[in-house]
Length: 421
Image: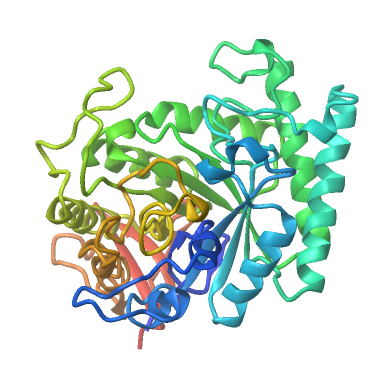
């Protein structure tokens, strides 16, 4: 059973969230791509399999404004109708649904935050802010009307450097002006306003990707706080070949817990290679194969090590694997008419050649089991800390750990899942 977190520090998470970004699953299904178990058994329903066998309880889907047709074979196909259909399936499966607003017609990431084509008539800050609100509200209303109400809403995708760029001066670098940062936070506040009005129970996620640099993460969320942006959860991308090894992740998570004790963290994207590590791009990738081989066993080892690391951090409440459903180019055999992807990425949890699961898929549930193992009923301390003062994560000193929540005593954190007796 997933561990409940009743946070005295100001937020409530009913359960840990484990899942993946499965935005391409309907594309693979449309050309009858086979999905097999490790022994070759046919998986008739991938969503059901991921829920029942892999213990996943939440799925993420990206949304483009008007997907760029020229990039369909690169995974840019998710318009509102597509997302409605997939979101409805996720909800019907009994899973949580995370909606990832890209606010673009193509990939939004640290290098690309392009204004949607239909928003380019007037790109003044005031008009773009209104477009953020109007578009977000319209999409959420449509999803809500069609049984696809999201439980989590990402306002933007990997927005460390801002969004809706018109030119270089719109990028939120460390030396950017206060006005540039205000432009971004106005956009985010407009999106958040729409979420609160239409789907008030949904948790708002702000998603950044400079996970290997704790100071940059803190600087970003300090600016969010200074400008009054309304959000619930810090979302992080963590790919070790871009964001450094696990000790750096540990530092970032610890720093966020200290600086923003009321904000849980979810790893909304992670993945690792199981073949063909692109080591010929040294300027883009850090070769981590000396730690985890680019093999199925290496991918599994990465997931196991990541889950072990995340179990140490009580502020981490979610883990999502990016593109677990990758499964070749599409179809059972090569057919130009059945191409889903023109290039393999080689980080999925099904083998692109055999269509069988990679062993890492079944190890993701370690995130749940290792987190649950931290849950304690009542208070357990060692003799050296029994007289130390006790604090909530928000810094309030308390006399006891009698209510469910997370507490700090001495040098340890204690997660109380049930009331002490």
